[in-house]
Image 1 (cartoon, rainbow, N blue to C red):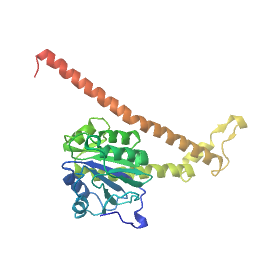
Image 2 (tube, rainbow, N blue to C red; image 1 turned 180 degrees about the vertical axis):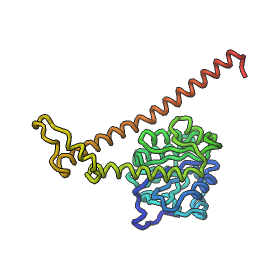
Image 3 (spheres, one colour; image 1 turned 90 degrees about the vertical axis):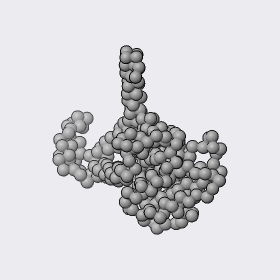
Image 4 (tube, rainbow, N blue to C red; image 1 turned 135 degrees about the vertical axis):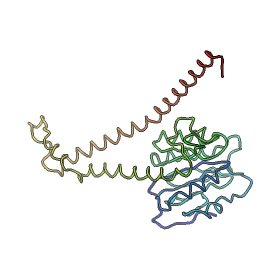
Length: 295
């Protein structure tokens, strides 16, 4: 099934969710879709490990229980809101400027990492609007991808086996990087994504309102009280329509830039803390083992 043109109201303006899965991933993704509301404004792109020599039935299997259209990704197709795109077999999938790129055939098995490849392109293309989810699967594909997404300010999740312990295989490999924000059951992931989407929508709206002067109140009165010694102590602005607005706009831009720098550093700090924590635990276990003669 190939992608077909969709109405303009489905054009993308929200989060783009990349989902990587392998063995056991079909059941996990079905559970994910069953708990995801139909109108989230997000785009979902499933990168499943597939046999390159057989036709995929993923689109048909997922469409049966999905509340949103499920389409096979095709080269040159623009992503859409409230849609699921599925990687075709024997292909490499990437995204650039909101356009899906499909290249066939896929690389040889030993160098084939479709989830890492797609997540890396997703991070570059969507930045903080990118989300990477690692579902059930064998191996470590996706671990590099979640790191890339975090480095670009995105959100990352991994499937939990129980409580907040990552499932073995791909989810655990991703969690071991220290770059996974949430390790949760598949059924809990949709609610996290919706909350994250709403949060991202609220933050820029507040900043834009401040920069454009729509939310003054006591802020304007406080700004009027500041003086500029270079001009003899005159108030810094004469009306809430010119100089003060410009200054607040510049302050908003500076604050935004500072926050972006801070967000870029957080994954590195988290990774360092995670590594230090593992080293401390390992050191403690070794010390205890030497002191007691082992387990």
